[in-house]
Image 1 (cartoon, one colour):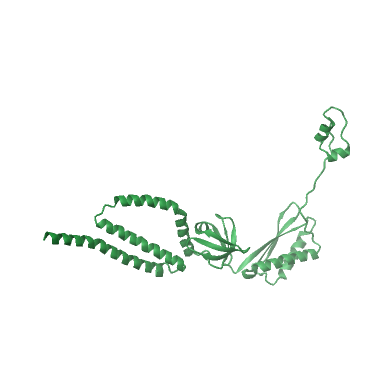
Image 2: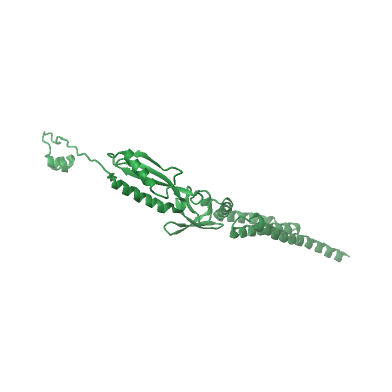
Length: 296
């Protein structure tokens, strides 16, 4: 009787942890299916799989620890060692988890998608290009010079993302410098007429041409107009060429940077006290102190 009772107790003792593990596996499997098919349905497949796997293994770990606790084993040493290991691993993988969480939020927020031309600025140096891939840990862009760049998702998420594909039209901004002697009103009229003759420049919003600043060598005129996004770059090149051609045809000067230099002719007495001064040819080409030094 005693032996049978011990066997029953042993069987019961082994059955509870086993039951917990079975239920743990079942719950983990169900949770992975739910996360993959429903909750994470609006994120890409690779991110969906990652979320499902993380959920699955977290539940399995919880079930395993629960089963060990019910079995009566002393887990204080295991928890202590696990705590230390967790701290070390946490510090070592801090950036990894930061990129992982940021990648999930990027997939949910969707500030950009594959194929979008974007400008990322702020936390990162300015990066402009077309989005090629957005993974769980990083985003990849093809820059306009043809090179590829990989950006950590944590930096992308904290940066300002300017998406150029979200609008139908985009503004063209050009700065033109003219000589101070030119008639500003005439130049503004020439540029406005040039814009009206360009078929891809939108009438609404209306183009704007105005004096922006008075520079060192030129009067700076800003030219703003809106064009369809799909032809922005080609239209911008066409507008610049057309404005240059019209200004040249009307004899409008666009000056180079200029500097006016004055040569001051000053008479100084030599350190010897005499009233003689250096000759003109020396005073113009030689520093007065050098002359006095050489004369001494």
